[in-house]
Length: 81
Length: 403
Image (cartoon, rainbow over all chains, first blue to last red):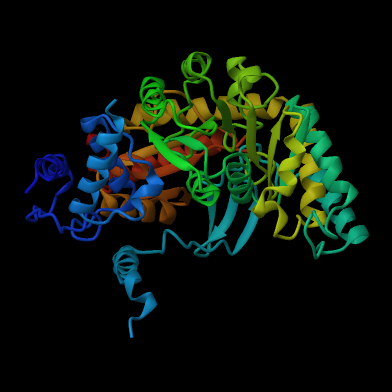
């Protein structure tokens, strides 16, 4: 598990009310059974933790924790001078 | 084969749970509407306290007469879009009247309020631009943002500092920046802290749109909304509003002073590719907007009624959506089952309110959302408070009071 994935899993814990085991291929919305607004609230936490921007229109292509980690890594890289 | 409707089974389960508790709270039938504040529901005369009929104008005799005359003279429908055969002199007369009322140079009317937001978001922002929207924005704003193809950044509700942080993060990117706020947020009834956002606007530079759907006709010395109340209209570039609340009809508008504003008529698909509003709806809207200007007592009355209900609820120990007096007064419930039970008990006792549950609400809240009307009497407001008190006393809302 990469460091980014581990950090995302930690951020996801407060949203994991059914206490399922989180893995890179966990589908953030359907596996955790959280609604669209809650997914956006979670992504806001990810944005602030990594100090990046994850536009909502990118989210439609982002289903799993691994997908999100890829977005986070790409955007963190971009943010560095 | 995958059944396309299979994915909606969880909704069916949720509706079944609700029906097991009583009436379908998200599909109530009004068998008759007796006045702006009374209907026959489930065979009983019921006080309406969840209609967004802020000015109580839906049965105004002058508005009804204007609608009847327009239907008789211009027909039942326009059978076309504003950019084809559906552009009548009365659509333009309404736009001119609204521009006067709003003190804006340009105004465009839409067939529904939902389309007004779809059209304005998609007309203003394109795929190179970024829209910054408040997290608690109405679905029509979210959908308009999606339609625009713009980059969408959500900032924390009513938090100008959070917006500032996100503006800084996106600095250096090409394209314009549109920030979207609402005058009164429809679920909790709270207002945007406009002055804070305008400070950020002066520092960072962006164009600002205020959706005054619930505040148009309601707030400000002229009834123009939150920006009017705050004395900051010059800093708000674009205003959106609806006719389905204080105007008592159906439709919506966008307005602004930009010299190219009218070009949006040829860039907004929700304006171009739908039939224009029916003559009756336009005529009643025009009559109602004139009344909003000529009859400020309606706003005063609404404010008094809102304060009466707000303080009455506070007296019962209810936890409310916001601390300011607002025509939207949301009572927080512990969970969905409690909200449904209380809602059914209230309906059986003779008052209709809205039920609002996630994901339609912020922060997973389950709400009994009341909206106040200028047409409510003191006795109506007192009765609503009394019925909430009785329902709580009967045990349906214990958890709501405890928060």
